[in-house]
Length: 206
Image (cartoon, rainbow, N blue to C red; front, side, top):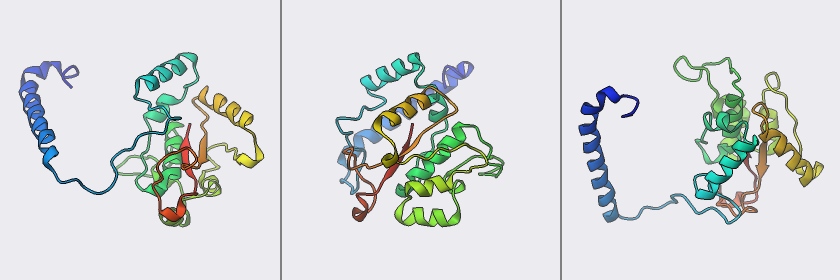
């Protein structure tokens, strides 16, 4: 803000100084608060690398240089964070549609046309997502076939070598993305749904 509005520097600095002081006081006071229930963040399993860690930044720099993160900026600037624990697939699909710059031809909010989770599926699929989450086939059914070309592949019908080939091709393009269903417990990740659904699949994109 200071760089972009350099001519306002003299008037901004006092306000920012006051804001910084206030925030420091809040941070200090938080140590006296009573612990609350719930979970705030969690450590990634050993096989996962945090994007904002030193290794994560190094890997991102490498793949950007190699050209195997061609669509990263489109995804990053259109990322839709799921509003419900069971909306992982829907938010991933909305992210991809926005990253492909596809016009939903429907108003999202105000005067803006934009995909969110509620705009990529029928009412029936949304009701199912609210209760149980969605299967891979549910996500396939939600994709607007008149706007994108879809290839649905089940793990049982493919191989690890073929999957890696698809990932490499997708990561080398900014017009093709992979939306994958996977098991979070198998990857050692925290599962966010009901205990009875620990074996259900989650969704992510790449």
